[in-house]
Length: 213
Image (tube, one colour):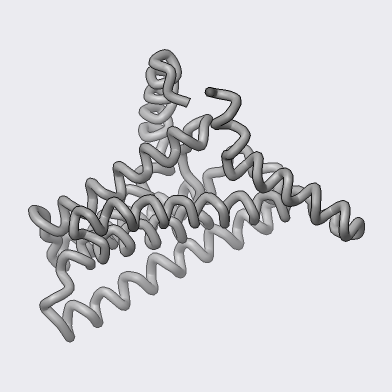
């Protein structure tokens, strides 16, 4: 069963597709790792969106879930973060976090402008200090590319903050979506820290012992 799961992961599929592309267009061989990384990320996010969309629709929190997911996906793509060793655990964990944030923001939690400002300042500090946090893809990034991804992350956070100010001033009906957005920003910021890496490593060990692939 474990071998079967590995065969259908985005990593395995992207590897096979990359081999096919390189075989058909040999001049792309020098960009093989970059192509594989792009395909793996694309396949992963499509699977994640599909899974979260189905569950969130059943729970009646689709808008909140999509805002949480897409905000996290952009920050994850450029800022990196802690991750599990297996794709299955990554999907289970991230889907749970997305749905948890969406339920919390849709029903119980409310962030005012002061909360959002504090999260923005904290996120900027963490992304300046830590981003991008890379793991298996770090061989694809030189210092110039790392700086580029850091800057993109900081610009994205600032654009979100400015848009939030405009939305809050113009409408009072989007509080759950705004809360989802900034809790997602907060979580992604925390995921860059050593504390979150330690938690992820601990969960990785515990779930591996219990047979979660």
